[in-house]
Image (cartoon, rainbow, N blue to C red; front, side, top):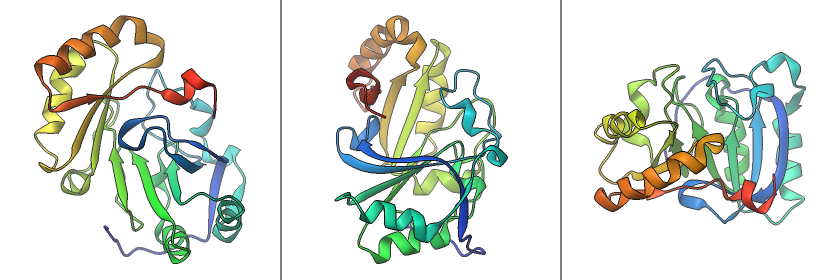
Length: 207
C-alpha cells in the first residue's frame, strides 16, 4: 500500500456513488462501491462523464457519510474515480475506509500528486495532460484507452515507465469500439504482455 502525508479533507465534491460491478481492467466483474468525485482538468474529448468536470456543480459530502453508505452494503472494495479524483486530498477518506477493513482502489490519470492509502492504483494516462512521474513506480495497473492506431505506440511509452509487475490493459474507446477492438485484439496477439479491457458495465447495463 502507498501512503502520502498531506492535509486531509473531510468533505469531498461527489457527483455520484453507487454499488455495482467493476466494469474495467484487472478487477472487472467484481462487486465494488464506486465514489465518483467532481473536478477534472484533463479534458478528454471523448469523456463519457463530462458532467464531472466542474467540481462546483456537485455537493460536498462528508467522508463519514460516504463511509456509512458503503457500510450499508456488503461491498468490500471501494473504487474512487472521477473526474480526476486526485484533485482532492484523499488521505482521510482512505484511512476511514481502510479502518473498516475495506479495500481502496483508485482510477487516476496521474496528473496530480498522489494522496491516500491504496490497495490498488489504476493509472490511466491521457494525451490531454501529462501525468506526474511519481505515479509510474506505484501503479498496479496501466489502462490505456485506444482511440486510434497511434495509441499503441503511446501505450508502449508508458508501459516502459511503470514497474515490471504492473498489469497492462488496452481498452477501446466506447464510441470507436467497433473500429478499434479488432485492432486491439490483433495487437495483443502480437504483444501478449497486454490484456483486453472492455467496459463490461455498459454491455450489461449497470452503472
